[in-house]
Length: 197
Image (tube, rainbow, N blue to C red; front, side):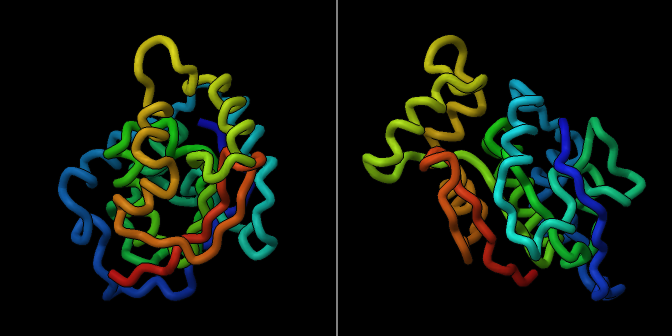
């Protein structure tokens, strides 16, 4: 998995008394996070899309698609150390076109864990077409690797059947604080409303 360029930004409020995420998350989510291997169908294409996201200036210094600066994080398992972090221990995090490529339970678990770990969470990912104006972009999205309507069912196709980014937020029990349409209506940039453990 490729990452957007960014520097680690640890929270200045990492409290020793904050519960660890593994104590707040269901055991199944903890097990998934430890073995999660995000792998978009065409890593270079989706990394390029991630670089084109108009992230707000206040979020540009936040890590994107990885937990840099955390020793247990590797390129193969970038989110494995999440369960061992205290809630609210990261100042913020950005996830750009990562969730759609994961099996649905993994995407929901990762989103829930990131929301608990980060004070600020920004997401850029694919959504369902909302209006007729978004339909051309949604039709073009079907040509992207992983979204083609033929062949075996892929996590990306299931992602759209389950509601895309908004469906994932809903299933994770989260809400959007800010929202902006991307890719002519085929994707969205969302700031997740803060979560209290």
